[in-house]
Image (tube, rainbow, N blue to C red; front, side, top):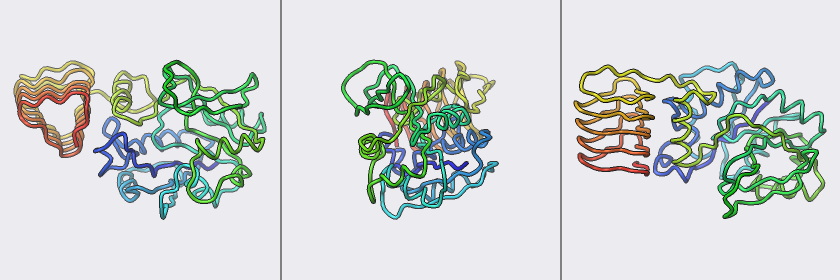
Length: 325
C-alpha cells in the first residue's frame, strides 16, 4: 500500500528554528523527524511506497534525507502554493488508486498499520482516523464517536482542559472520499471531515493507546526527547557516557559528535547536544536540546529550552523555557 506524508507545514509554533529548518527536518536524538517516521514505516509490512507532500522549505527536507536509505519506494510532490492539509492530500493522491494512508509529518507513534487496515476494511469505512486519548484536549479539539466507533462529531480546539479522545493525525482513506474535497486550498480538520460527515460518509475512529506524540511546539519537542532517552518511544535514541574529567553529568543525556565541553560544565538530565556543540566553562544545560554547531557561553544556563543551529548563548546568560534562534 501507499502512504502520503504531509511534510509541507511551516511549523510556526517552533519558530525561530523553523525559519530556516523545515519542521519535519528538526532533529530528534540528532536525526530528522522525517527519518524516524520513514524508518517506522519501513518496518510496516503493509506499506511499500511513500509519497512526500512538500511545500515550505521542501528542498531542505530532501537534503535532510539524502544520506539515509529506506526499504521503501519514495516519491515526492511539491506544492506550487500552500494548499493546507486537505489540498495537499488531494494533490499528492492524484496518482494513487485505491485506499491509502495519510500521515502528518510531525507525528511519532508505533501503531500497527496492518491492524488499522483490517479495522478499516471490516467497517467498510470511507475514512478511518487514528484516535488517541490525551490528558488535555485543549490543544487538539476532540472527536465524538458512538458505540460502534463511527464518528459523529468533530469539536475544534476549545479552552476546556480535560482528558478525551483526539484526532491522532494518521488516516486511512479510500479513493472515493477525495471527490468530496473542495478545490484548491482547504483544511482536512476544519472543512473536509465536517463536509464528509454532512454527506453521510462512513468515518470511523481506530482507538490507539500506545505511544503517540505530536511534535508541534517547544514543550512537546522537549518532552519527546525526554521520553526517547527514557526508552519509552519507538525511536532509536542511544544515551551517552561522558568520562571527561571536571564535567558533571546527570543521566540520561545524549552528546553528538565533535562536541567541546569546558571545565566545570554541567550536563543535567535530558540534555541533548547536536554535533559540534561547544559548552563553555561552568555552563549548565539541562532538559534542553542544543542543535548542531551552537555555542553556549561560559557560566551561562540553558534550562528547558531549545538552542538552534549555530546559535550563540552569551557568557553568563540565563535561558529558560524558550527557543533561541
